[in-house]
Image (cartoon, rainbow, N blue to C red; front, side):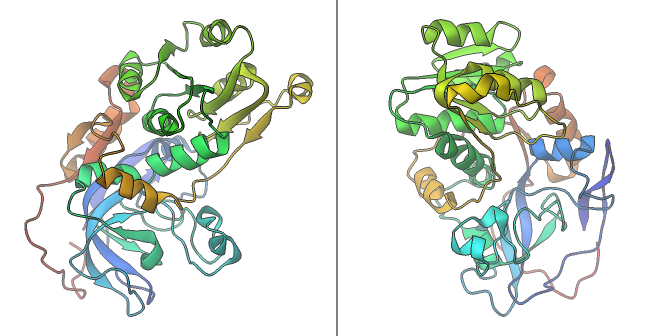
Length: 361
């Protein structure tokens, strides 16, 4: 099969690799029907995630069709259309028993496209498939469902829930990429008083307004002054960092009010300064976190009911073999207007189960 393979910092190639196979009784092999490129994948290409070594198949978000399962898999079977979660959960360790799947110590956590081969391929092996692959109802389109693999759970859990958004709050989302936009959409579920979105790209800010942002500002137009003006100098109740660079994190800490919360969502590859000389007296809470995806079943029900706005997020679609072009378009979002890119071939009308004995192809 073909897959997107990390060649080293700055280099990716769509090339032949061996087909995956069931290696553990809890595994499933899934044919990938729709897959995406994530901002975290761009961090990997920059060399920000040193655990990802050359030769690794990238990707951790996909929707596909089950073609093979291990003998212990009970909740899915060949032929099922499934959402592949970005987080894998053993279900047995202490963290999994607390539904903190991102911290799984039984072989799970964020492993796809990180520690094991990922989803940007024609097929993928999904470990612990009973908890890590979610059957999809027919009412949910695959290009919408793929947004539940990572960005919506991440925005909701690490941004909205960690940030403690409440009715009437002033919420600032710094970074209107896919996760930041999903944070705007899910923050609205808690009836905040206003949502302010900050980004470099005017196209992404336009999407933020469609999703419910009450005010938008580019990073060079003075977002700190806007927040001060809109809150009578108090600052925002909740500020979410959805970029992952030191400057934006430090800006978030300057925009939060005394007693407020800074919810860091972004993946950081460089150290950011924590100015405790200014923050200690303000009673500010700063949270970080890797998504657990414990909210995925809830978000899936909401999507099936038409309660999650997904149509505005996927702006560019490619055939699966156009992976390198998709990376380029997504990496140049300020020029291309890309919000989320998705790749998938024509929809299959029937499932042809792959011969488990088939070799690489």
